[in-house]
Image 1: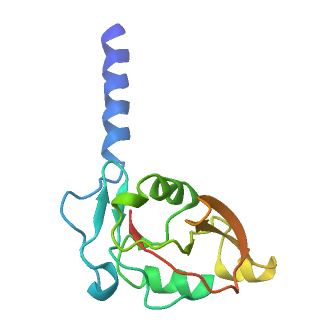
Image 2: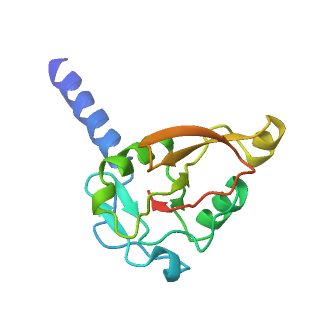
Length: 144
């Protein structure tokens, strides 16, 4: 019985680790190299595009643009934005701007219906703040 319990434990452990998404060691591909450039790896976390999107845009346009870069590209989540704040000195071309983060509140339609709020990363004040989705801010995509 003890051997069976140990075997079950290691099977569970293996299944847990094998189902996790692995961050690729090589720079990820994108449909728009003018934006992603040569992505920068934050070790143990995710890749960050080298450049901002071409212009400030509202949340919904920004999210659509990020997802259009390719599979696994998106805006950073609130937690990922906090990591970006910690590593901002190693992220090339990152300006002292305000950047959109990915909202965890459902679909874009539900965001519109709820009065529309999403978090932004303010590098000027080193804070994560809530903002109206209609506002125009900068965006930096991440590959997760």
